Image (tube, rainbow, N blue to C red; front, side, top):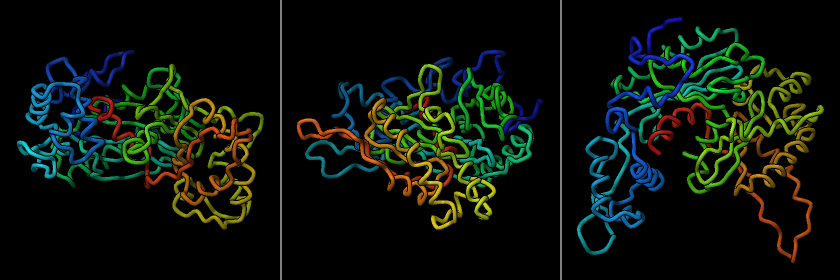
Length: 399
């Protein structure tokens, strides 16, 4: 297969047997030839600007361990490169020279996120400041990998043209696929995605689109979306439960994705074996169809779910003990501040699980109970997996 890139022929050679998206970053985004997109100090400042919109140069200087001259030099260099912008002076900071507010420059670059689920591929286009510039989706049922990528390319090109974006400002692509990592950028996905399984997705997609591609498990990219745009704005340690056709999870530790030694941290679904009911939406759809509720895809379930459907409450009752066991295991092993119910789960269905949470069966030693995580329904609507995938290239290299 030798298709053209997203914006024409690929300018990036793909190394045989070795794949590194960092090596494919376009030169205009690097601090120096062969270098990185951002230094360690620059990344710290960019994270502060991301976490604290409208922060002033004086305020960020007070948070830094660097001297004022170094802070001003770094910020000036980021502004000269177009990575950040200086805004109006911020009032109410006391005497002294006015201090400009700092913001990420959205037009500095854009990225794409692609989610690969059992029935649908989602696409998200994002600017450098985290604004969603466009979204699209396409059905995957019966599609070959090549055909799906070709259709995705058409939709991505259409999104770019609608925004009149400069082709040279595309920083890269993130991909989130439902499955666990088996080495490199190869994943073992569920049976409906067998054509996507056990192949090096990084080199394949980089060659196809002519862009660096960062590949993750889909639950991890959804967890990144939650960290960047959801509860992660105020909670630094949380577990993310991703209810999809299958079931997965991601873990955010101090604001960063915890991937583990083999890239599969958070595969809590494997704790449920020996025919124990699993909270995977494929089984809910089977239960609903057995009760004459015509739900044929996870996407349809997400859009149309009604808690009063025959079989819905019954399935939740059957599955809640397994979900409670998972919450207990996550609490004991990871000790997060919160556990977020997300993925493609309808909010009403997530709430049904939360309401059936059984408290920990332990004595409050000295009359003081052990702190337990809050159970939260994700506020992110739409395709969290694609949203997080779009954020991955920027988070990986700048934040």
